[in-house]
Length: 101
Image (cartoon, rainbow, N blue to C red):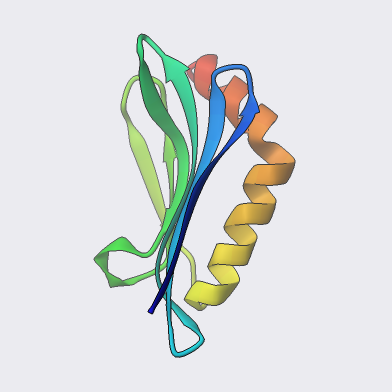
């Protein structure tokens, strides 16, 4: 089993947290999330993961509300999508989150 884990600063008070496990060449667990530092703590803005046994995305609002959407793709595909999406769209996600939308 191989484990990869890292945190990348993206901007002021913003970072991407990445974690995945690979067994026999396949992703078996993963979490990729965008976090912002607000009110003296890191808060999740958007999270892609495989918790609960299926790939999905959680979108959070600053008030703590969350919307979950199942992604009908295999874990390898979602891991790649998550990294690319957050890399390209983190500023928009951060602004929407901070504006309370």
